[in-house]
Amino acid sequence: MIVNQISVFVENRPGRLAEITGILAAGGVDIRALSIADTSDFGILRLIVNDPERTDKLLREAGVTSGKTAVIAVKLADEPGSLHKILTILSNHDVVVEYAYAFITRKDSDAYVILKVANNDEAIAMLTAEGQQMLTPEEFYAL
Amino acid sequence: MYWNEKAETMPREEMRRIQGELLRGAVKRAYERVAPYRAKMKQTGVEPGDINTLEDIEKLPFTDKADLRDAYPYGMFAVGMDEVIRIHASSGTTGKQTVVGYTRKDIEIWNECMARCMTMAGVTRGDIVQVAYGYGLFTGGLGGHYGAEYIGAATVPASTGNTKRQLQILEDFGSTVLLCTPSYAMLLGDAVREAGIKGKLKLKSGIHGAEPWTEGMRRELEDRLGYKAYDIYGLSEISGPGVSCDCEAAAGLHVQEDHFYPEIVDAHTGKQVKDGMPGELVFTCLTKEALPLIRYNTRDICTLRKDKCACGRTLARMGKITGRTDDMLIIRGINVFPSQVESVLLGIAEVSPHYLLVVDRKNNLDTLEVRVELREGFPFDEVRRVEELERRIGKEINSTLSISADIRISPIGSVERSEGKAKRVLDLRKNL
Ligand SMILES: [Zn+2]
Image (cartoon, each protein chain N blue to C red):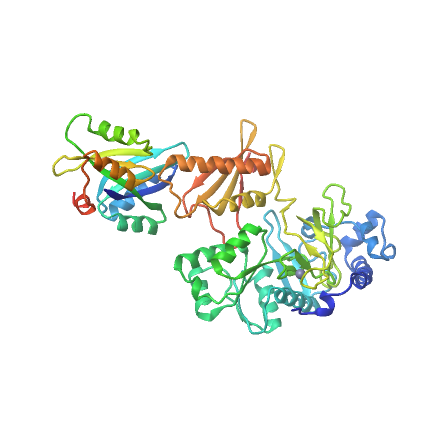
């Protein structure tokens, strides 16, 4: 399924990341998963949250460069090699994964992986055809 | 449409005759009444009697901002305070400000020149003119104000600042003309876009000056505000805005040369260059009473052409100012004008025209960092894309300016917006 990730562009200066997490905390945003990519001069914060619309608005109002990015969330089967299996399916179809990060839910310790690819629908079709489990957005945000 | 058809469409020969006559009078007056001029001319070995034709102007020494600073505040005035009715001052980025005085006739001529320029930009007495230049010692506010009133337009003295209120005036008052600096217009354009009220505005012309801007910025502004943007030029030492302006042909700024005689001179030799060649822009005030500047070197770099324009005017046309010899940066021995960097950035759709040049020296080597803001909607979640964009900008700057720059893509809103003259350069070498 396709979910909205919150992407935040962060300038590299001391304390900036804490300022942003402070905004999220003050706004009561529930962070499900997080990944940080950084280079020598900027960082990118990627977040899966309970309410992407509200979170994006909250950050923008605080003057933060924020945007919503459509990514895919795939449930990982509870067995060794399940992430490898997904990446192999995509690689066999020449799909380039720009970035990926995984997280575990609190309720039943299910694991999910977030994937950024060029064409979400195409990737979902490939994965579904190979028996990978997708959720509806409602199911996902209710996790 | 002309404000003063006779003056604006005069045959070249007649214009030269009038200019020659006025020049003789202006030089004589300056020599007799302004001590620093007399000293300067004596030093050069030239007397008023040596100036008979327009060609003789090259015999005269130049003046510049330093002369005005040395004479601070009134040392170059040619009249007493009983004749002065207004005083303006221009803020020097370095050191003392320069003080400018106007007699009643000077103000009338300034109004006349502003009216000519604004008419070029399509302003009529039926218009509602929002003057969003700063009111005060700076000449933009009052210059625009009296020019608009002189035409008979409904003049709204909004002054600068308070963007929200400016938007409200634009929308509710139905302003048809906006006067402000191009960087402030860009800020208002951003705000209009954000508020989604472009369709409700009645703007037809924007008249923007007091800082250099590019063709790319003109297109940006026209897109954001749905009007036609005109470039107006002037400097307080000469009078203020209204020295020259774009016409609808947008093929150079017509100089009000029956009042301000323009020359382009080579920055090194001081000799006049051929029409169309770039050099420093020099003005001689032909009719100014209070502060009659002779061969005032503006340090602005541009070109001059004297052929007849498509609009019918014969007034000489200046090209856009491409830089200033005094805000030119020398980085690793290469001349860099902020406006050159700006024109590169305006050609790149993924970034906004808000930028800052940071110049520093590390290990005895000059460094140039270009901070430029991302534009809304850019997919910055992928590091690869941001880095590709940085490389692409670096490459384009390198091919245009022959200098390598460290490009820093920055968050939206992180580069300081300015309501007056934009701060585009941070030269840290000065602190060394
Ligand atoms: Zn013209």
